[in-house]
Length: 578
Image 1 (tube, rainbow, N blue to C red):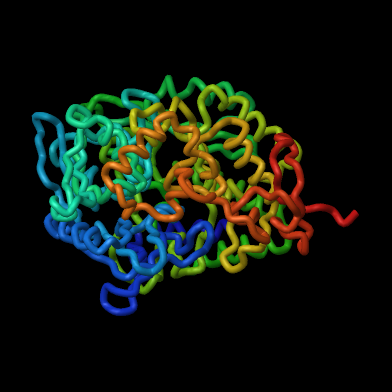
Image 2 (cartoon, rainbow, N blue to C red; image 1 turned 45 degrees about the horizontal axis):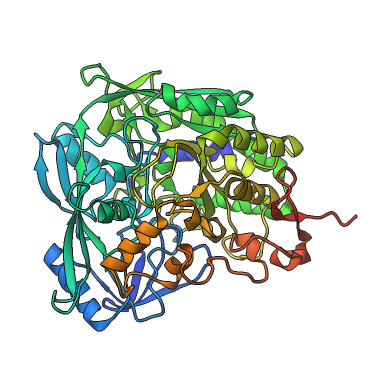
């Protein structure tokens, strides 16, 4: 079945998909609204509400919106056109807040080819940013691989690509100026527009570079670009025998290095990816296959198969499918082509604007959901957790070896990760941003099955994933990606940032009444309450770390037990009746 589904996927690989759903829905015009993310559910499955949504089309309109809300004392949060953040970053408190959408703030403001700078509004997508830079024969050196993110969204969550070179792979570290619209005093007309830069106001600038949407609305961002260059890419699959050692050093050898780890198979796909001069021959294209439009019925069948495997405990079948999928993706070079059409062999050489990011399923032709992005919540497609944690490079070898020790105990335990293409591992480096990365690290991005209908349904090998998550956070001091993760990843994390207090001082200065803050953001910043939610079954959804059996699923045999390798972990384990 998986083979034929793959053929169906191939057949529709160039089909235009139905565009993503609007994350904001209102009962009457732009009032009485709800907001979600692009996956249709937050970690706690709560419904976020707002009194209304505003769609400013210019900075003047944005200023007017913020001023009016500040005068009325209303809470505000920013929502992007696709709302990709998994945590509740877009939610206001209660039902009386205002959502400010950057959907129509999507224009180029100015270009300066001599200075190699490009200024855009915050609703501009990464795809637009790449294309506009290329028109100037310039390039953003590093960025995420998914081009549906917006500039404001990337700045809000610390989005990144993969590199230890130069200033590193975080988008915000290639920004020279931020224009921020924040609440103001009565004498200021209830709104203030600030122009932030390293030279003029370094404290506010380094807070705004990763802001979590807490300082106001980013109106414009100026990027420092580089002359256009090309990249030479080769994927190479190897055994993971020495992966712990290789992971520590590989990023120093190759500028755009990353990994796809298949731990249950004992394999790693190395991305050998380096900069080459612009005059080197090659017109390659990075069009990542899983980001292309898929036939909705095929995605639904694949999801149904996985649900059946989960309910029946068919781990062997899941592992078999994972092996076939990994082989298929490697054989088609993950969608990379030498000329935009076919793959003829490595290395694939292409210009930076064609090799950095992709997201073809966003192409906006409507076809009644015949095809779609595979995670579109309007179809019965992919529904998953994403745990994304940056482990300091000094701990990476031990962390990898601990995961391999878990696989040795039960080789089938992590096949679910491989059905989601494997563990994506990217390099990040330290950042001057107050809530940016603290040191050179490897970001482990784990995507795995989540029940769509029942939050109290445990997963196959639930305990193995929970142990890896807790091991990274508690044993190896990992930092969570602000735009991904389950609640427990943020518990106490603010204490790991040496400049946390500096960020909070700027937040109080720019938004003294906390109009852009919410109960949830106060929790993750350690200001009030706790981001974990302790209740029956809470550990199954990552809302808590279990401390008693009721936090798991005792009626289905899942009890709270110590970890197998990291004994300090507390995980939901299927306990034999014997």
